[in-house]
Image (cartoon, rainbow, N blue to C red; front, side, top):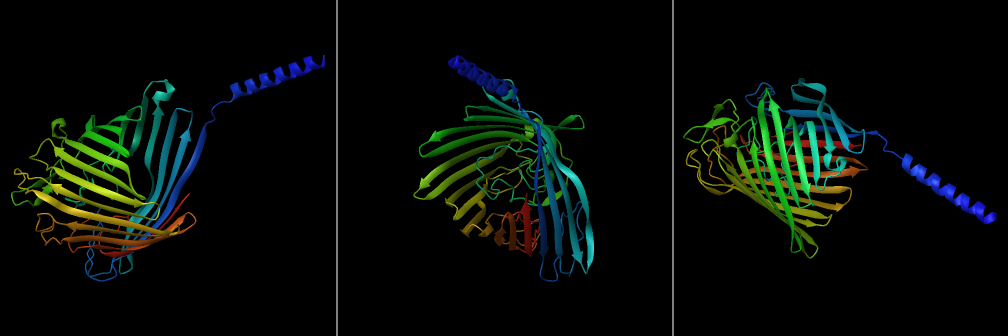
Length: 418
């Protein structure tokens, strides 16, 4: 009798455990994260003439013979919604303001808005497919893989950097959809489409194959891109003297897109030094409107202590646009050093070595184009960066470490993620 009672008790316990397992269901969730950021920059001298976007309606006033200061508070709250195990929704709400200051007066505005609103559906998991399939729908920043870019935006268009349009690829946000197919973690195929006014606005088809190769892995990428500026020159025309003229109306023609070819070899070790290699080639299908560009970069990592990056961009000859071949149009160097976990130092340099004798304002182009040097101190999750950005007189350049001060300036950047 005693044995029977024990047996029945075990059966009851097992049954209750099975029932509990069956009743355990996915619980919807909503999570919050983001950061608060404060940025300030000053020219440190009079005679500065700064502008946010020359020739556009949202340009800040050009300030002559005044010290220029720039303040930008920025707070972002990211809301992540999981209604079930197959879907994820994301909202990013942003509070920001930009101020230009001269003689104590402020110009600028503040706004509370969303700059992300999209959801991702895992169709592969939901339909139990033998391949991976994820779809993204909504307002988001969509990009091809750019496997060759190992850091400091080697694929960005420093060659033609100006305010109206400055990138080869999508670094802006779009209402659109991207569908991504993955096969055995070796093949990734992505397609992106954005519509506006009932017509195609932007699109790309991007394929990446990754295979083991010796001590590392080899990635091969091919993509076809069409976007609203329809030209690496951002919709601007170029005359026979190789000078940019007024903006033309962008048009979309599927036969005037750009092919992207990329290679990346990552995971190589030389003793304790990690080495990654990347290269890319941009081939416009309509060479009368855009010029080809190639880029390569190599990155060395010394664990968490330091990293070093060097890369270059070059331009083949384009007779239609009167562009001479430039094997080294510009060279970029970046390095980071973290002696202790709470302190780091960063430096970035751009050297122009190309054929242009003048910049877009008709002034002499300096070989030493950009220097960005800074130090960062962390206090818990908060970080505080103090740096100096140098850009040659009358030249326009990117700044490596994501500040908004695009001219000579001392800047301060404080950030606290949560």
